[in-house]
Image (tube, rainbow, N blue to C red):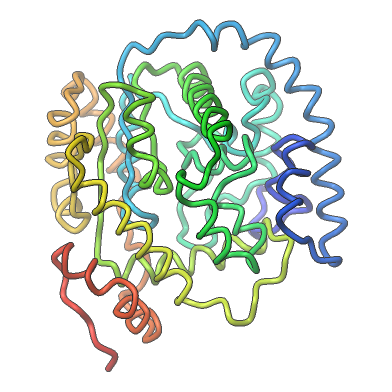
Length: 371
C-alpha cells in the first residue's frame, strides 16, 4: 500500500550531485534539526553519482547527436493557473514528449535506472498530492523546474528547501539576468539535455514543457529552440495567489532544511506573483517577443476540446484528430475538480491589491475588497 503523508527521510537534493549540494550550501544555512536529513540526502546523492556515470556512458553520445524533429511547445502560465490540466491533456498525444516526475527527482540517472527506480519511487510516493488530490505517479508529466533544480544550483525552487531565504531567492535566482555568462551557458546545456532525455524517455517527438518559472526565460528559450511556441494560461489572480500559498505550505514538510518562518505569509506569494506577471507584460511589449497564445482558464474549462484545437492551430501542430480520442478519454477518466474552495483569505485580497492590482485589471478581472 502506498503512503499518504508528504514527508520523506531525504530532501529533494538527494537527486542532485554532491558538488551541486555544496554549491547550494554556500548560500544557505541548514538548521541543526535537519542535519540528519541533509546527511542522508548527501549520501544518496553520492551513491547516485556512480549511476550518473553509467547514464552518461550509455546515453551521452546519443544526446549530443540528437536533432529535434519538431519545435517544443512551452506552457508558461503562472503556478496554479491551470497549467497542470493543460500539460496533462497535451501530453495525451502520442507525439508528445515530456518530463516525468521520475526525471524531475533523478534527472542524472533515470534513463538507465528507471526499471527499478520508478517502481521503488512509486512505492514511496503518496497516491495523491495532499494539497489538491491530484494523482501522483513517477511516470506522469511533471513541471520541469523540479528537474532543473537538481541539475544546477540556481533555481527559485530552492525556496522550498530554504524557506527563510524566500525573498533573497526570489530576488537573486528568479530572473536569468542575475546569471553570469558561464552560468547561462551551463543552464542552456542542462536544459537542452533535459529536453532530449525527456523525448528519449517518453518516445515522443514534440516536447511539451510546463514550467511557470520560464516566464523570464522566454527569450532565452526562443533562441535556444527556434520555431518554438508559447502558451500563457491565466486565471483570477486572487485564486492563483491563495492556491499557490497553500500549495507551498504543503510542499515545505517534504523537502525543507529550514523551519518555515512564523511571518511567512500570503504577502511573499503575492509579491512573487507580481514579479512574474510584470516580467510577462514586459516580454509581450518587446518588438521581438515570441509567438504566444493567451488562454483564460475560466474559458478553457467551458470547452476544453475547442481550447485544445485552438492551441494545435496556433502552434502549427498536426495530429489533433488522431489525438482527440485520447483527450476525450483523459477528460472522462479525470473529471476536472475545482482547484480549491472559493474562499479567498482576506490577506490574499489585501496583498494582491497591494502588489498586483494592476495585474488584476490588465487580465480583465475585477478588484476585490475585504468584506
